[in-house]
Length: 369
Image (cartoon, rainbow, N blue to C red; front, side, top):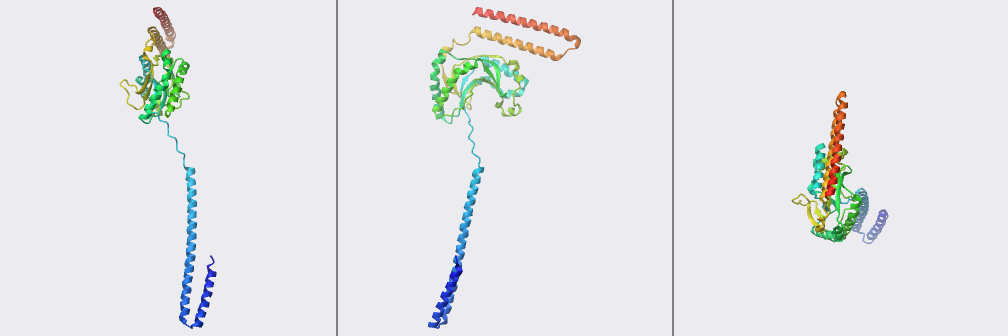
């Protein structure tokens, strides 16, 4: 804005006005009033110029401030970490309960053997009363979702009821296995056959639960198993013991636990109070026809044969331990040869008696059957 030029034009205008008034009136007062008016106009011009400059400065400051805010916002958006998805935390699970006494007893034998070698692992043992095979886990938020899941369980399993009644599923557990060296479990005999029977059931269950709008944990590599020890059960222990040593399970690597007949599939609560027998709280249970299972339990002959095989395994383990302990003693050189011969004779005699006894008992039982 060119204020200097405007001021000069105002000066000329007032000078002409003053001269005209002085000539016509000759009054000194006219000149005085005009000069006062001129000064007022100059003051207004300066004030206007200051106001224009101030407004320009304010606009500039606002522009800078807005630009800076945009930059800060962009920086914050770049540095802002994406929010992590909430981890899936199940609170209910589908399971097949394992409650045969023989399986529990054999598992207890293995557990006692392990804690004798490492007492710290007692905190990682799974109580036999809660033994089960997990089919899958879900997170249920309220009673409505629980009811929908119960209905899904009934709808899914009712399609397999005739199959399980006509051809009951019997689970035989033998041997030990581990997951990542942190979970010890009892293996299933004929695992592929068992998985082939249960996989369609699991797939249908996942489908029906999904139709109810319930999230089902992904089980792409589902492996049926019976957990008897789990390090993660005690986080403090897991920090000290990262993996189970193979020597803990070597003596029972092929142990026979026994049989369990699949009579029902349950929906259980992880956090609810356990039942009187120590098992999880059952929210729902789909039972197959129990009357057809009475004749399908292992016969007396099969149970006795199993007991005989377990006794044989026990004697073999004791002989193995006896040999190992005698080898560690290292007797004097002059006695070593004679003692080895005596021990060898004892082992051969014991093994012979064991083999003959097992053969006679097996033949007798089979004839009796």
